[in-house]
Amino acid sequence: MAATATGLCEFIDASPSPFHACVTVAARLRAAGYTEIAEADRWPQAPGRYFTVRAGSLIAWDSGATNPATPFRIIGAHTDSPNLRVKQRPAREVAGWQMVALAPYGGAWLNSWLDRDLGISGRLSVRSGAEIRHHLVRIDEPILRVPQLAIHLADDRAAVKLDPQRHVNAVWGAGAATPEFLGYVAERAGVEPRDVLGFDLMTHDLAPSAVTGRGREFVSAPRLDNQASCYAGLEALIAARPGRHLPVLVLFDHEEVGSTSDHGAQSDLLRGVLERITLAAGGDREDFLRRLTDSTLASADMAHATHPNYPERHEPGHQIAVNAGPVLKVQPNLRYATDSRTAATFALACDQAGVALQRYEHRADLPCGSTIGPMSAARTGIPTVDVGAPQLAMHSARELMGARDVTSYAAALTAFLAPD
Image (cartoon, rainbow, N blue to C red):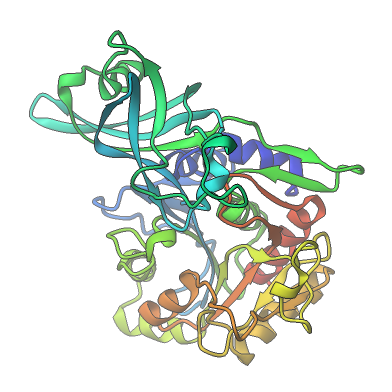
């Protein structure tokens, strides 16, 4: 099944949190014949299609009939997106309003979260006898709203500066009859509130993703950065077949906050799984280290399209258009991991896929964002290329990309995983 704009919309709407994204990917992998294996189990020695999940991160691979010397071709993306997350003691009462205290996660563009109907998603960690179990929770109802200040009350009508401590808390009730928030979430998840020992809860915009524009040429959706890459990478993995390379998909959590966690790109997750794939195939550590040198990783993260209202904010020689093909990202100070070797690898993949390639550099007088690319390259020693699909409104609660780019992005990544 080829990647489509409609398929991307369905993927995003099913995945309001990193945990739900992993569930969505896992269901698609199982339907394609992949088997889940737990990290704590002894892994099967037989070739096959497998995946493993650690919290909000997932790694999948198709070992086929490859041997321990076969190089890896890896697509890396991330499941998390900037949003507003629930504080540990969220209950507030202000001027008769019942509030839920929120904190920005990552580089959220805060003004885009105002005056939106918000639901809640994430995970509850719950006592079950002497054990702890984890329950996903998803409330797709407009229970939260962060209200904008009336223009008549603003000191400066041109711009209201938002304080992340004071101005992004959500209204969810009025009067003393409003239930306790965490108890309400627990009951909606079907667990006893007193058994909740921990939680990771976040807000999500309830407006569904849509294919828009005069000619249905755009995708308007939350979390395009970076679930569009998760979706394209997933479709690429399922379409690719092992040959001269062993295809791998890794989806990390926590990229938006630096990736320093037990399942972020700065953890041992990817390197450990790659070594275990080698050992399960009968190789040893020498085989593992040798195969890394011939492997390549594509860090798939969304790219900046040239903004029509702010063209001066972009490098003049690198205008990027939507629906014009995937983007190769280069930054001389290694905010992106691309070098000439890896750039050539991805350019060849695009040529083999029959899709156009755009090349991006950031303005030298503006700070450049980064990706999992540089840190994954440093952690594994695998040569890495940074690529993406062009979009507008990155880190907004609602983002925009080209509908045709969904298909071309996945096609390029498929060719990268399994080159001719």
